[in-house]
Image (cartoon, rainbow, N blue to C red; front, side):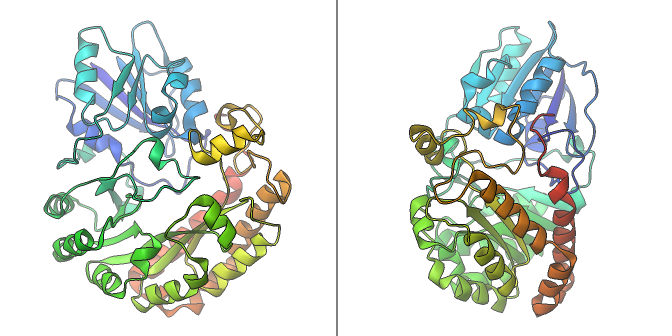
Amino acid sequence: MKITFIRLNMFEHIASDAMKPLLFGIIKSLTPDKHEIEFIDERAERLPDKIDSDIIAFSVETYTAKRAYIMAKRFKTDKNIIVMGGFHISAMPDEALEYADSVIIGDAEDTWGSFLADCENGAPKRKYVSDESCGMTELFEDTSVYRHKYYGIGVYQISRGCKFNCDFCSIKTMYKCVRRKDADTVARELGRAKEKIIFFADDNLFYNRASAIELLEKIAPLKKKWACQISMDAARDDELLAKMKKAGCFLVLMGFESLNADSLGEMHKAANTSRDYEEVIKRIYRHKMLVYGTFVLGCDGDFPDIFERTFEFSVRNKIAVTNFNPLIPMPKTKVYEKMERQGRLRYEKWWLSDSYRYGETAFIPKNMTAEELSEGCLKIRRKFYSVGCILRRLFSNPINFTPVNFTVFMLANFISRREIDKKQGQILGR
């Protein structure tokens, strides 16, 4: 059989910030050689008008769901099978089955083989559900499936799931528990990686202190440079930060989410205490690592002054990269259920709406208008990525001038600057 994997974009747009996908090289390694495989990344290339394959497999996020359903209609024939998986499909499988022949719920490693065997027998099931109780085993990545270089950055994953349960986050819609690979397995996998720079895609790299230190000691000899997501509890640990730096870490992505203590409480962001944010950042800088900070604005405790306060905080603390995002009610999250219960959703399913535009507010905020929320986020995003602000932040922090830090800082800032207006206001799926 011929199988086409597709990584979709939110709309027809060649992106300059596309990172290497995590999934497709792994799935290719799990596919018997008798099958012909191709991979199309719509973020980096145009989709063809026609795909002549026996199986077309879409990996679907909420922001790409509408386009997945549009493309499924375009490419569906009497002779092929459309299958969908990913975060959105795991949350909304019945919605997806209106457009797909089969859906894969949860991870695909333990169900992909069964799906292929059923297809060969002409009887694919409607739903394939991963066994989440299974641990994470050693995975092999067949990188021959990728045609693009993705800036030479590898993407790897040590664990799936998160020990926290923030109300706005969609992680728990796919993973109810945390599964991890052991440190020896991670070291072997990374040792096979051709890339010298790695981004760990884990939602929180360190589950506990003991396993974190073991991992760092195992990967330090590999001499990789890497970035990861961590929570505030890890960022408060000087010994852990020192070991991270020694093992090759140059950037940490942290969800500050809000400067407003009431909003943090509303999100159930258990690890965060906004009063020590500046000390946490200084501690990270002492170890010469960059900070990528993310913020969620528009909670019920937020007022219109939150935008300028958040911008000034980010510039004052010399944060290298940021995301200033309006709160988004993702399907099956507690935030979505709350907004639905209170009648505050502006669209029944914003991800399928023909009116919703990227960057728009999908709900009715409590202490500002929907327009104030979307425009406030866009305004400070543009200010943060203005040339003057980029240079101000660059020269205000000496750690930006190590070779890796400088390259990453400049690439991340100018790519982010380029992408803002390309994405803002676009109708999903178009």
